[in-house]
Figure 1 (cartoon, helix red, strand yellow):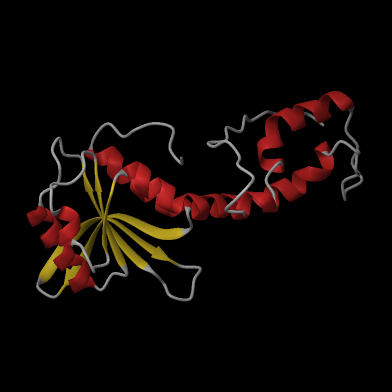
Figure 2: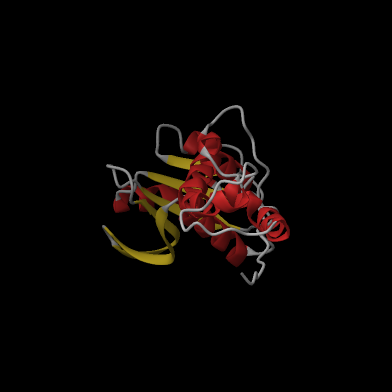
Length: 201
């Protein structure tokens, strides 16, 4: 999963969803006001794909209710999704949905999910974006910690003790590679915590 803890309130749920889409590489806005056919509406999370050809637009409604979401709320959200012209709409619920809710979204672009279900759906895209973001750093650090002792482009040489420190601190980044972009097989444990160290060369 992407997050190692559960949100404790509605604001955190909204922030978690926004953070996830942002880390997936989407242009993301929280509490975005959009124009609809009949006036304006504030959307909890708006995400737009900027790297693809389709410019996929996603809107998300976050519900931290103590009870399942009712059909009236779902029908209202369907109208917002259709009026705005989104490609897909998610309602993320803490406590599920009332009976008949899934029938209400049949043949629509609205999805009813928990936060964990949303994380699962976007996990591969999130992981690929993580690799794309940090691989340049890994490439720069690689010569300094690679065990065969490759010499960096700047011809710099570091002693063994400093090399061990770099390895322990930055191994998570240096370990990123093409296999992290695969959907099957290799699985790395996330989140990765990268300690920061200061070295004097």
